Length: 155
Image (cartoon, rainbow, N blue to C red; front, side, top):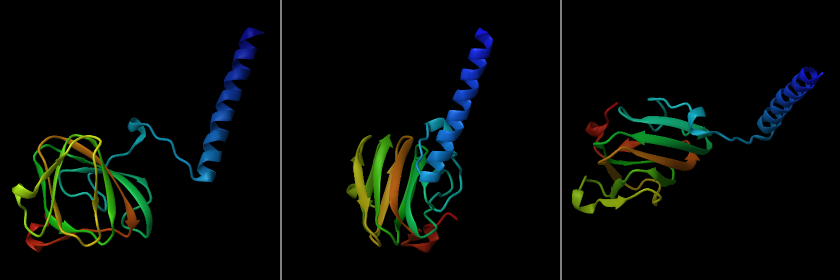
């Protein structure tokens, strides 16, 4: 008798979890743990050497998007612009960022874990990661990247 009750409760729990997942998908809600995020070396914003996971939307398409980017230590991004305004939160590590058409180490500002900054549309900026870094980027697509000096584009 006890085994039948346990099986019935287990079956009910499985049914409820599937029902909750279906309802959440229908509503467009999402709840992901870090291990459930699918990182890729490719993406609309990813450059060689970094990884990206799309959390909401797709930066290459019209509409809101939120992505996370993981940069390895020693990573630099030459001056570039984006067609959309973006908001960035540093989840871990320290981002060194500056604004301008030329990479200038004197203009870099260190932004540690928990910091926030913006990349306004069509404003030139550059980045340096002296340690491993993860950021979360939100904006309104379609996004893209245009290097101030086209020769700096590693793709």
